[in-house]
Length: 316
Image (cartoon, rainbow, N blue to C red; front, side):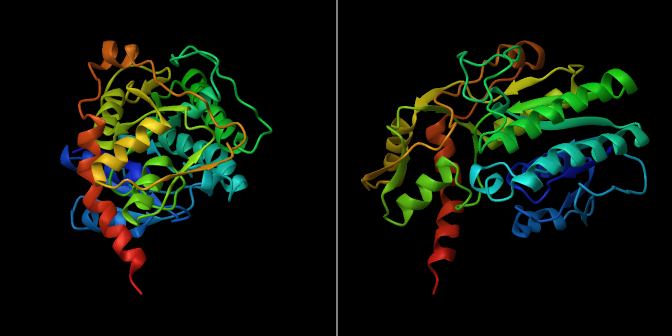
């Protein structure tokens, strides 16, 4: 039985990764400090005897007894509303947290995977975005705390691979959705669904012509696991290449919920990417992976979860 540490285990992606590893007969140690994670995401995990949890801030030295075969570093704020609120903590978890996790992986002779992001491409000048595009990132803009933390984490990971011969993997995650997202995390899918379920206008930034590509969480986690098990050390895009405008996406949400709530337009945030679409040729070729779940089906799969969360919000 292999044993893994998953940081950010109480987060949206971290909790789904823990479930995936447990389903593949891993023993899993989850770690989180709940700065953005939600303890409710761990409820089902705690029932599994092969899951244990450590409350810890990974920017502090990590001590973990026993062997490890994998370290999956998913701890980080991942939505603008979070990393704009706590920019210094965001940079610390990308820098100090990654350094501590790499050190632990090296001490345990474990394979290391870092959850990086499509934000490494910034507001891209190349479309769609392949892994060999270096990006268009403003390091001193309001989003720089997240973008540069992840770019530094990638560079540090490659330095450990080259200098210490550590087995490392880097996944660049594109827009992902599914159950366990926070309604208030500022990302477009939970925002739109939450607003539609409450009968509120959908908040559209700018003209709504900016594009995104949405991947259902089960597809994403499968791609990440395949990358972990592969021999590829360089960054690999994992996401859904089906691109649509925010206005088109708003229509999909309205159709799924059966609501014709109006749109409400707001100024575009600074440095918000105008386009976002992964080039997944590498994942297709090396991992035999591509997303299987269409957006319309994916929205239906997570509607019950979001309905419960909205009902909790509306309780007196």
